Structure formats: C-alpha cells, structure tokens
Image 1 (cartoon, one colour):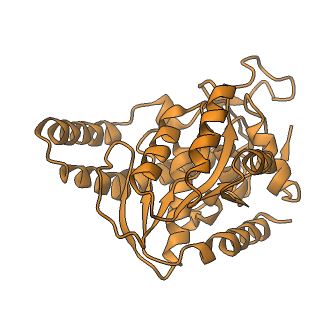
Image 2 (image 1 turned 120 degrees about the vertical axis):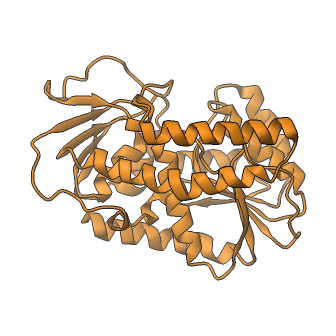
Image 3 (image 1 turned 90 degrees about the vertical axis):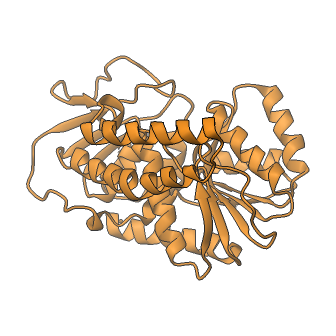
Length: 319
C-alpha cells in the first residue's frame, strides 16, 4: 500500500471510531508544551481531526497551564494521545486522573495511547480508579495495549484507534525533497525508552546519528520564546493571575506548534533512508515518502504499533 493510501485508510479508521463519540462541544487537554516533536505531531493531527467536528473547542491547555476551568457538564473532555498511559512517564498519567476526578460528570475520551506499567501495584490502583469512572472511554493505539485495557479496565469503553499524527497534512508546512540526498539517518532517542545503546549491525556506518533537533539543540528562536514563556509562567504562579496562562497557551499553539512541524519536515528532508527508534520520526518519515526501518523501543511499543497498523505500508518495515 502506498503512503497516501495508508494515510487515507488510517484517517478513515480514526473517523469511524471517534467522530460518533464527540456529540457536543469539547475541551482538549494535555497539550505538549515540551521539546518532543513527536507529541506535537499528535497534537497537530488531533487538531486537524477536530476541525472536521461540527462542535467547538471551549478550552485547551497543557498540564502546566491548566486551571480549574468551568465547563458545562454536557461538554466532552478530550485527553491527548501518545505513549504515556501507565507509570513509565508518570506526569501525564497523573494529570489525566486529576482531570477525571475534577469533572466526574463529563464524558471523557482518552485519545490513542500505548500502555506500559513497570509496577504491578500501580496497575491495581488504576483498576480501582477507572472502575469508579465508567464515563471514561480509552483508546489504545496498538493491539497489545488494547488487550491490556480490556483485561484491566472492563468497566470502561475500550477502542482500538490509530495514532492521531496520520491526520497531519505536511504539505501545508513545507514541500518534501524529491531529489535524492544519499544520506542516511539513525534516529536514536536519548531517553529511558532506548532499547540498546550499541550500534546495530544493520545500520550503515556512514549513517548520521540524531534525535529530534529540538532535543539536541537550543535554537535561538525558541530561546527567546522560552524566555517570554518563563516570565509569563513566573508571573502567573507568583501573582496568582491564572489568565496569564492563556498567553502561554496562545504562544504554544500559534508559534511553537507550527515551528516544530516545520522543524520536523526540514529534519526528515535531509535524508533518503531513516532507521528510527522513535515512533513519530518513523511515522512522519513514512508519511513523507522516505524509506523507513523501524527499530523497537525498550518495551515493545514501536513494533506493536507497526504490527497493528503498518505491515502493508510499502515504504516502512520493522528491523
């Protein structure tokens, strides 16, 4: 299946699963205000998907800018998808549970997530928590996570849904290279999800090794914006003027978000072939027509996603 055919197929699957659930105005929370471009791709794809919905967004924020916003009980709460359901990355998961507790009478939809727990006690605690919140619909983005959710959160509605990044229209942000560069990228993540730090034998020795550029470098354009955001957050927290957070939300939505996507395109466009330990470098590269070899992360997230959705996409394979 060509990249375009696969993209359209996955978009249709997302539409079929999620559109009927959003039957009122909504709020969207846990926007990614940090340097991992992959989560920004999820945010952008979700934003494009939600533009199709006839209902409107009443409020959006990150876990750092959120404050107890008054919303009608009829509103649906949408929580960002990604790879942080469980205890490996505790911050986002704790925030989700906080929101569910704050709005017990609202419908909540957790967008497509990969699940991973390292502690059995945390699984038991979440089983109890979500059993008391049957208003929550959980979306798994791979079959392993889907099975886990079905087994442990039987009181909740569980769906299997592709990653939201497939809704991105990269052409809106920049054109792809059609001229061969003869360059190869080894996209090697630098955090605790890296499976193996040694050089894999199947990667050419001349491959260039990088993580997301926003993680490797502090660009001047972001340094200036970070300085402004830092003072806004300081002012909001110290002075207690919570609406200042809305300025941060606007900067993140209208400056950082599109800039990060442009950085992604510029980064990927340098290479013909990509070996990636990061799922969203692989997804973006495959969507842009590159030859992609997907490597697994520390707990099987990448291969599980590939086995669920990408086995018939002609320009990506797991390795």
